[in-house]
Image 1: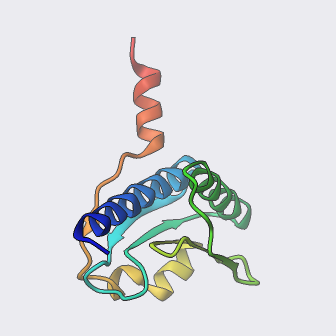
Image 2: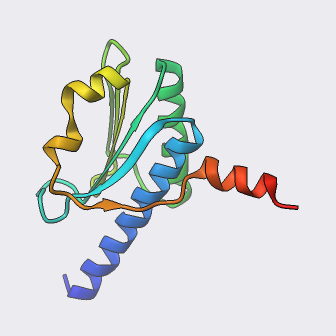
Image 3: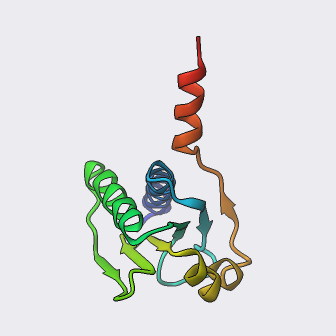
Length: 136
């Protein structure tokens, strides 16, 4: 693969990660963040984290993320939800999305595990929507 192909792949993965963060935000997830783990992981390029307050909200957030990915032509490689509905995982290979119940997120503490990973800025859907609604 040429350097250009790698750069294009990386740009596409980063764009997908940002869209996944926006999808979680639009489903009212809290503490959404995107971690760039390209230099730290051999498995994925970006990790998206978000917290939900109920199993219903977490599954809705996962569905919104999957719909956004499908609209981009991205395929979901694997999806998993634990039996207690405290963790939903969406694996798009280059981007992995974790939606946690807050206590489960604190327990696994992926932010600490990937503490050396740069955080990628993204545009919150709720804030953008609120600002648009306030415009004259």
